[in-house]
Image 1 (cartoon, chains in turn purple, green):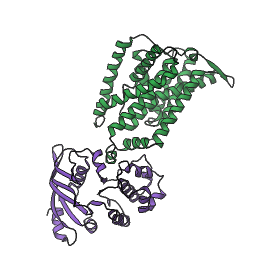
Image 2 (tube, chains in turn orange, green):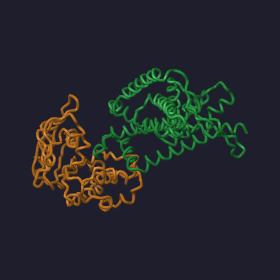
Image 3 (cartoon, one colour):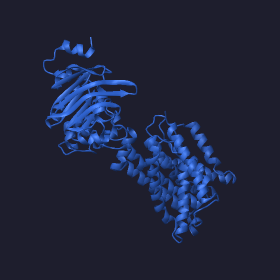
Image 4 (cartoon, chains in turn orange, cyan):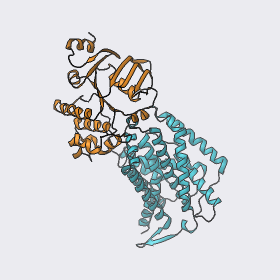
Amino acid sequence: MTLLEVDALDAFYGDFQALFGLTITVDAGETVALIGANGAGKTTFLKCLVGLIESKRGAIRFAGEPIDREPAERISRLGLSLVPEGRLLFASLTVEENLTMGALNRRPGSWTLPRVYDLFPVLSERRRQMPNALSGGQQHMVAIGRALMSNPRLLLCDEISLGLAPLVIDQIYASFARIRAEGASIVLVEQDVKRAAGAADRVYCLLKGRVTLQGPARGLALDTLSRAYFGA
Amino acid sequence: MIWIETIVNGVLYGGLYGLLGVGLALIVGVMRVVNLSHGEFIVLSAFIGVSLAHVLPGVHPLVLLAPVAVIAFALGFGLQAVLVNRVVTRPDPFASILLTFGVAVVMRNLMVEIFGADPRNLPAGRLAHASTTIAGLQVGVLPILILVVSIALFTLLQLLIMRTRFGRIVRATADNRDVVRLMGVNPGRVYNVVMGLALALASVAGMLLAIRSSFTPYSGVERLLVSFEVVVLGGLGTFWGAMIGGIALGVAELVGLRFDPNSGPLYAHLLFLVVVLMRPNGLFGARS
């Protein structure tokens, strides 16, 4: 079943066009990697999905419902959850308060506070601390936990390995197996091509706001990929 | 002895100044907007209180605090929903400053038109002048009551913001109004309630102030000035800082009046000037 259907999506920042006719689908239970260099439009694409960019054209359907004209606060209730680039935690809320914010528009499902602490035990020890007192990796765990608390059908992760030590990235990627086991689909936006392709079922490569390559992640030839990535 | 009395009365009176300013501190802290019509709403609340007292003779003005606060909440909610939310997301702070300045001017003139320019006050019978002796000090009953009410409201506000689900949403919205939308929160609706709360708190202060001294439709500027000083003295966006800032102003004003009976609020303003020169982030604000 197709969970997310994006058809011919254009997006704009004022006069500047950032996305050109993006057509992307995500099936239920699938993990899709969205790779591309800086400025390729990956973050813009995710912001369009969750309703944070209003000047856009094209059709976005989520679980059969058109959402391209809906405001962000309505879209989030349908089960579309974003782990934003740079984490964007609430600095004046404790770790636990940050997590409970995610449950405001909770859908029925298996993710609860104890289960998130079970997934990231270190957060349980630091539940009363402020996010700024945490390491970068721990802050990412809070951001992922916050997104999970709504029991999303589709989890969008924007650059979650950026600036983290390889060991911490391993830990975070290991959590995806359990998130998928609970039934959520995942869109991974990454600059780290190898890691993203390793975790995904399918890959889309973006270059300057256009899809330059798509296909199954397994057996992706490195030279084809590098051409799509750099446009060389 | 008379100096201790003066200082004690200044502290009691200062609680009221704290209450005037805390609403403004709340708005600045949550939506980074300065409401220049804050003073006019304080004066309007006092006029509403006087009118209610006129319609309901025999009802003590302290009882009227509750209905006036409810009306002020509704006015704040409406002001935010109809006007301020249109400009609050603009990156240019001038939009909200001009808007609320315009609201202040219109309100001031409407109040002159409706209520006239004569000085009014809220008659509170014996309460206004009653005093009691505590540990050999002559202290007014009304000032004690004012401080008790102020501390009670500050405590309630603190609990609301720090301990409840609504307070969590308010703090999160203050941190990032885009990200809360991803959690299903409409920032505009949060702002409506916050503006309502701010003006409800200010209306209580406005009523109590109207018992103590008279006011006219033009008193809003002086109220706004005090509110500003409280917010800046306390450090932008901190509640208890606003309370302490208010007390500092109250003590400075009453001590100044002992020295120089014609000084009015001059010494409070001088204190403000000195503190801002020495600590531009306020008494409790983070040092930059």
